[in-house]
Each structure stands twice: as structure tokens, then as C-alpha cells.
Image (cartoon, rainbow, N blue to C red):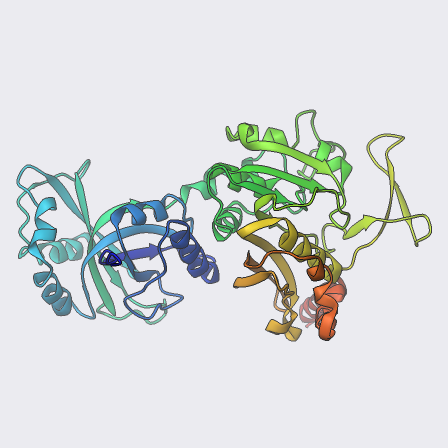
Length: 461
């Protein structure tokens, strides 16, 4: 006889109003990491900062908040409604046995009020707190260091130009835990020891690690590692990290600096130094000077996650090693004798090589998380590269300009790689729709040129 699943408990999630499309995949991925699944009591209003979730335990709720950078706080939900009257009626029906452990006479508490899209006066806040006198609070109020914190949360809608007198939704709950929003500041690229032209924003780096369900003792790989920004977020969550890049100077921390007012990189500007800066050096395996289009790894499933930001040809060139027989470009690197021949590396080939690599080297259930640049007027879901061993999990857009964006693609390995999957993307004409990625650079700069011309024309009026 199968054991019954534990009853789900209701929690209120307070989310940050940033990277809205990325929030649901992050929360869903993290819940699955902890053995749960996403279950909402009501239809999720994707742009709203308030979501009601059903989660099996407070322990899982706390685990979620130890990882998320998209959510600010989570609360055990005691009541909610579309008006104050509905909220109070809901609270009066909340089981007393669930309330009493937090309302004892030997405990301390405080009530905090949070409003979205409206600012209340102190007198208005006190009036709302006093209206909760029907709740059997027996403890003492302690505003500085209470044992229990209760929140009244009010939602005044999304339109700052049309704020209603009364909130659309009201919630009351017991505070459980805060998310990891402070990581955005503490890992800010502005404070980082070693950066490049395309170093990833700290918030997005942590979102990528969460979409990839990175966990302690995983091995995470970035085939376009650059200055290692994506390794840092994975290492923070306890994963061992490694990477590769075709750029010798970047891997070795040599050449011209990316910072303003600094001409050359210093003697200790490198990926290892970045991880050392955050106390994460023990998780650093190594970084290789390598061409991602060439096979260098032994056969087998080596990586728990592949998290990367391939070059788009805008601020970083798309290139791979070539031969003297091709149309070549020779470049002298950091020393007189370190010279390689490079050839063009089409975006479509970059992404298919990446998917093929992930299909072959990810463990079963492992995830590939990468950025795909998009020319928005031509975007359809058909241009998202696919592979028979990989299942598309999420597809989130970040705007770059009015006509371009990049999409964070998360895929999960669901089928073991076989030799016949080597060139599966060439079958049935599937490859053709993706060739449009190759002209992304031209389309990107054509849009920039048109915008500059329009600004100049407007200035002449």
C-alpha cells in the first residue's frame, strides 16, 4: 500500500520586480531540486510580486529561499482576500492549532506592513495593525528582535498612474525566510577582481545556476568561460567548476584590461583569483585553452550541468581554430611563439556543437543553460535549436534593444546519447531555420545604425 503524500501547506511568495520572465522557471527548478513540484493555489499572475504556492513543508520553503535571487521573502499564509473583510473572515477560519504555537504569552512578536505600488502613512499602518486585535496574540511586542514576525501585504496593482484607494488583494502570514537578493550586490561585477567585456551580471549568473539546478558536489562546465563569471555562481552553491575558452590571453589573464583607466591586466587577474576573492578557490578545477568545436574530452557523461554564454559576434568574436588551407587569420597572442589560425564560426554551428556536446557529456537529468541571441522581428519558437537527447525546459527573454534580445534557454538531458545522434540536427531539413542566427551581427548593427540616424535626424529638427 502506497503511503499518502503529506498535505500541502500554503505559502505566500514575495518576488522582486526584476527579470519577470525568469522568476517562474527559477522557482520551478529549485522546487524540483528539493524533491517538490510547482503547485499554485491560484492562477499565477506572472507579473505580480505575490504568488500563493502549495509546498509540502516549511523545510522545503526554507531550502527554496536559500537559493532564489528572484524572490525576496516567503510566508506561511494564514489568510488572504480581495478586501479587508474577506481577509479577516479568512483569518477567523484559520485553524487555531496552527496559530497558537506562535502566539504564546512567553513569546515576542511584531507586525510589519508591506504595500506594493502605494505608500501608507504611519497612522494608516497602525490602524491596519489595530484591526487585527481579534487574533489571539498573547506575547509581547518587540520591534527590534522578535521571535515571530507577521506581515500584512497589500497589492495595489501594477499601474503607478492609477493607484486605487483600497488594495486589490490582501495577505497575512508568518515570515519564514528571506531570499538571496544580497548576493547581487556582494558579487557585483563592479567589485570583481577580473572582468572582461562580456562578464555576466551577478543576478543573471545566479539565475542561470538555479535554472541549471546546480547543487553541492556537482561538476559544472562552461565551454565559453571567458573571465569565469558563470563559474562563480555555481561554486557559491558548492559545485566544482571548470571551463574552456579559445582566447589564450583571457584564460591566462594577460593582455589589455577591460576596466576604464587601466591599460593592461595585472599579474593576478585571472579566473582563479576571482574565485579566491569570494573564498571559493577550493571549488575551482581548472580552465583550458581549447576550441569548443573540437573534441578533447574522453567519452562518457562527465558534467552535471553546462552553463554558458556563447559569443554572439558583437563584443566578442565568434571563431574557432582553422587550417592554413582555409581563409585564415593569424593572430599573435601573449608570447612570440603562441600563434593560432582562426576561421569564422557561425552562430548556428556554435549552438549545434553546444547541444551535441551537452547531449553526449551531460549526466542523465543534467541541464544545459545558455543564451541565444534573437532578432525579434524574425523570432519564432522554431528557431530554438533542438536535439533528440535534450528536452526544452524553459525559454526566457531579456531585451537588448527594440529589435534584438537574447533568450535564456534551459534544456535537460532525457535520453542517452548514441552514435546515431551525432548529426541528428541535419535530418529532415531541421537545420535550415537556424541559419538565420548567422546574420545576427549584421542585423544588430543595422538596427544601431538606423537608431543613430533617426536620433541625428530628430536633433536637426
